[in-house]
Amino acid sequence: MGATEMSFEGNVTRSTRGGGLVVVANRLPVRWDDDSGQWVTSPGGLVSALSPVLQSRRGVWVGWPGVAGGSPDAFEVDGISQVPVPLTESEIDLFYEGFCNGTVWPLYHDAIRPVELHRHWWRPYVEVNRRFAEVVAATAEPSDSIWVQDYQLQLVPGMLRSMGLSNRIGFFLHIPFPPVEIFGRLPWREEILEGLLGADVVGFQTHRSLVNFGRCARSFTAATGPAETLSFGTRTITTETVPISIDSAKYVEEASAAVARAAATELRSELGNPESIILGVDRLDYTKGIDQRLRAFETLLADRPDLRGRVVMIQVAVPSRQNVGEYQVIREEIERIVGRINGAYGGSGWVPVHYYYRSLERTELIAHYLAADVMLVTPLRDGMNLVAKEYVAARTDDTGTLVLSEFAGAAEELKGATIVNPYDVDELADVLGASIDADASEQRSAMRMLRRRVERWDVHRWASHCLESIEGVGDAVL
Image 1 (tube, helix red, strand yellow):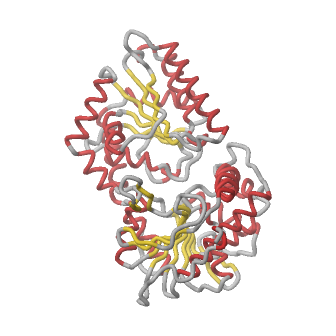
Image 2 (cartoon, helix red, strand yellow):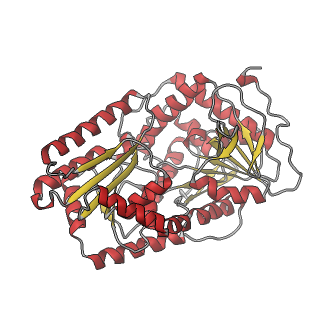
């Protein structure tokens, strides 16, 4: 039986007790481990936040298992039923690499790269969303709440309504939602919006995204009313600003451990014990502004000769979409800038920029956070950016400075950060210099404010609030 012909009826054996939860995401929260020969839970904030809820409510997670072709029947890992949705190689190429990453990703990030609009990408997007909806419809019980995640599955809520489901449905968008002038370019704008309007509650990372969605819904569909409570047909759709967060207690615990402190000290020693360390940690993507950040550091070294030999910058670029030509070009450009800076200013045992094109293990990452005096989180556009929150949580002694792009979703929350325009290289260079020279007491005051916010609103409180909103209970206040 072909992958697209697989039947999903009866894949999950569940009790008839009500109040269950079905989470729907592009990927299952598990991966196949060749060494153990079994499925294991993947790391991640969303998984850690939802696992206790799903375990206690005999919940189900619907998603793609990560391999092309036919998928296994439903299985259980750590008390959570996993319901796979199959994707063919062609669908991975056209739905995911094509429409999701070639159309939606740049469009929703303010079209800072050209947006590709292809009908042969749109059709697989519809088909894959329909398959997800069919699996959910076959899996969910009438009393279950359904929570759909992110831009890959924007049609699913509306499709579930067209299938006759009356369940409470929520949707959360992890990336930005663009303004009407940009979203309006999409030939399938009405279909996307009506898909989202199938939810009872739609959550966004920022108030700006919420307002953008409301304007688009009123402009391109029959929706009416204020952005927070849109009327569409006979239904009312609530929208919320609910910024995702991290497991802050876990970061505090790990950053406080002696092994992390020792690793941070060793890292500083390996770098020659500079007076200041500037750190950037990003997935390699054109939205992250890594090249502008490096040019700002280059400008700083040109304008401030007194800092040469005293300051180093570490830039970690986590590999991403390595087979996509544009991402290879980005990598080459970043490496060229790093080489230029080190060639012009390095010497006498001092290397200005330490560049790593790889992922960091969790312990390594926390050691870098502890070692860094200045954290640069300067995307050109970002839904949230959890690196900013991870750095803050790790600074248990209230030292350090967070330099944060005004175009990161985190800027709406983290008011104690130093906010910058990442497109302004001269401003960013000046801010870097000021951060290096900053008064220690002012740094501590700002960091304490940031830490209170990150610790109060963690990923567990975020998940609880979202689920309460979907189910129409509680009155959590951000």
